[in-house]
Length: 428
Length: 122
Image (cartoon, rainbow over all chains, first blue to last red; front, top):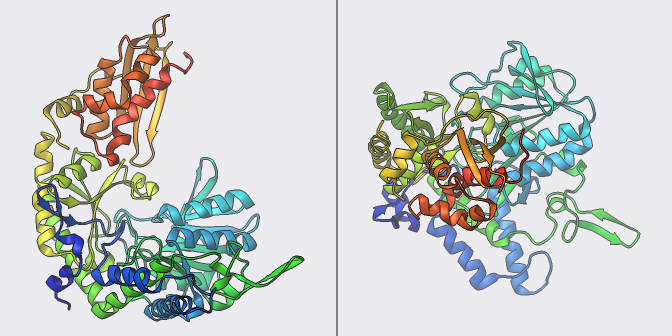
């Protein structure tokens, strides 16, 4: 296990104050803070090496290109992928859209089926919803139980009709020969639920072997050791900024043979094979999907973030967060017994990432978050880009405290202490 | 920002909260980011000034207090009065200090009431 004090010392922002109070940053599921090693890597690039990549023979361009290649190598090793399977995008959302606009529109036709889960972030729901509407495909949605766990068995289906008609049910009852794609999150950003990817993948292989599996890894890769060779998936998207890297850095991983067969997403510089006025051919992956100048500094910063996490050890990162969420759940359950809060999501640390989702009874999540902000505590409130999940629990909004490598038990104690102040302010 | 006693008071005891019988003008406004909803019903004088106004909805203390305070403030106003009052006026009612993250909460009812002037009676 790593020394939390040493880790915290690497994050300059953690020493700032909010008003008079020290910052207690509990919104890492939205974006993580950045260690000085990442900030220095970005600064070093702009200070000493800044040039465009793959474009010049001059020294700076060669250095910048080598730095991006090195970062790609680090990311590939981090998730046990081949380097050509790592495509840099801006964030997980862009990655998921890339898959929907390329593989999706080439392969999903009228009458086909796309399966997603109720736990999806809007970025892994809306692109598939739109695709289904556009091509006349059907959307099916894996239901969740009252603790926010995916229901895998085939306990019947229900039809929901609004702008479009969708089918909801347990995964087994949604899989058949018409399913072309299953897109599912590895860890819910709203409830923290760790989904059983191995079981999901096995079920797909059994009941819909033709279907591709897309993983939203935005809350997985930053927090748990990820091995794409063992995921049983075809694609995975994740964001660099949620794993200590800068904003503007994201990744999709795809199986090489699938990426090779796909059309490009954006057309332009750096993604071409040969350009003639009479026609153009494409470069191979990953260049094919990286048109235009990428966020070079962002990618280099992400490389430094991967180094930082590798040094900590991803098993240690998960162990740290598991301990925190177990502790936080225990403390929150005391408040629950007193009738002060409602807790959402799985109650076991085994099944849950470092995400604590709650409401203070009788208080809107925005108001609770606003009160906590007075004490320097940053929590997210609202629908967390997962409106259907919030609605599933018959709420308008939820508050969420999310943890990372720099989060301490003392911060959780402080959160719990200040949650007690919230009902007093609203005279409940 | 602080939850001043006035905000808490309007939140706990919202003024002009309720429904209005038709014929009246009805406007519904949602805040997609947090699920808050406000429905404003009102009648206008023949000069186009707010005569009666009722509202109901679900939301946070800021959006509830803003709706409640505005429901008292806007009676007698016409469209240009309300536009002149503006978002700054709403922030003023709430104590003058609303951060960017809460502006949607603060202005939900304001945006709904503004639409009263351009929505037909039903």
